[in-house]
Length: 201
Image (cartoon, rainbow, N blue to C red):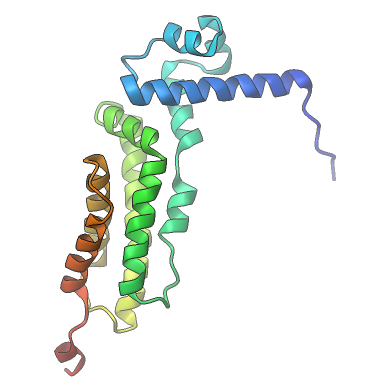
């Protein structure tokens, strides 16, 4: 088993500079958009020569991709959307809605970039669609388990998952207060909860 090589001081400094550029790009792209941010402005923010940016990133497009890769939130999304299948929906859905809302708040700058650039940048659009599809699938899997347990009536759980998650995204984008999430969960539960009469059939 080979020993892990200790990074040199030069390598550490290079990684720190790269991180500074990514953080600056995240901030500027989210505020002014990709088109509205120049390489010179980015370089001035970090205090480096514009040409140095191309030492770390192949192009401005590559920098945008690396920002999304670095500050994306797939692992956190999976943590939020994989609850115990044994826990009741009435308990889990409010927790999921609030945790997802808080995650969007925490990752607000990345969301701004997706919203700004996802309509015109094909790669970002595909990344957003893939992330959305995975999120809906994770929540639908939980709902399927609760249908199987008899708590929820049989229905298209993917549609329910999309309705919940997309609505949370919209509430976040319009800065709606988190207490609106309670209304969302109540409406959803009124539609998918198993009725006593249905249990007696």
